[in-house]
Amino acid sequence: MKFTELTIHTTSEGSELIADILWRYTNYGVAISDVKDVIALQQNKVMYWDYIDEELLSERQDVLVKAFVPKDETAKTLPEIRADLEVLSSNCAGLTALGSLETTTREVEGDDWIEIWKTHFRPLHIGERIVVCPEWIAYDKKPWEEVVKLDSNMAFGTGEHETTSMCLKLLQQYLTPSSVCIDVGCGSGILGISAIKLGAKYAYLTDIDYVAVESAKHNSEINDVAEKVTVAHSNLLDDADIKGDIMLANITAEILCNLAPSIPKNLKAGGTLILSGIIESRIETVKTAFSAQGLKLDKTLKEGEWFALSFKL
Image 1 (cartoon, helix red, strand yellow):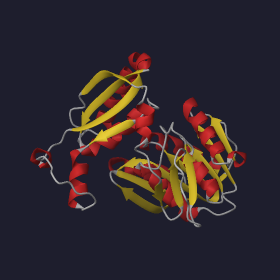
Image 2: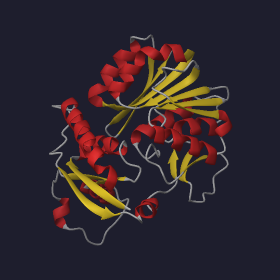
Image 3: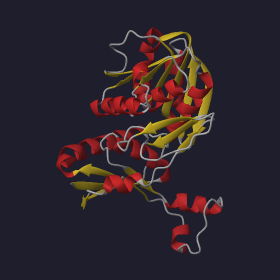
Image 4: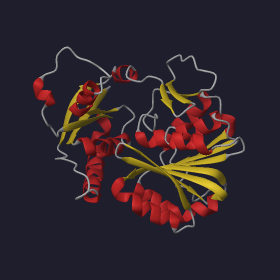
């Protein structure tokens, strides 16, 4: 199978934002190449190298974000990605430096890409109890841990991204055995599946992306929680009458604000709303949108360039 390797030139600050866009268009991996990560590992004594090219230690702003798109989808996908980049650039104007956003492509043979990609994933510990583990890796869990297995098609949330990690950390703080959890924009299903693993009564997951819905259903099955999980292919909560004790939405600030008016009808009185996917320039807008619906801000988390908020109704 042939792929188009798409490379976008950006900055450290913009790399995760660019990666989020690219994840919408591929099931085959997104990679960030940032020399600052190498320098940080060396300075923090996490890793050591006998030799580092001195040029790497100079101040460089160019960060590469790469994605792999099937060749036969490239003609349709590239214009959509460029349009999303233009919107991002407009939203971040004067707030976050995105660099040149120069885009290059090349054709690559991708028959072995999934196997190569799989070698980079390892069990990931999030919070006190959750361990996100690739399906193909055997993990000997501790008595207090709950393992969430994800298959090799992990394009919609693995726990590695700060936004997902913060949602999982907050979820562990609020969840009880009687909790009904709703995940809006569920992606891989990691949040809803984690809720059941942690003891929730039931999880209702929605997503507008058919591939994400199928991925979430499959991941629910391999985690043996499918009987307690419903995955709906729907636009946010327009068609849902269910009410949750905990609602999670890890999307973008703009979509979160559009979602705000529908929250009270789907969140029980005294319930908890967990939001993530928010950059600093949008955090006050999100707070205002949800406060206007009668929700009270309870906690704020920050990891990297991202924020997560929890509200109580």
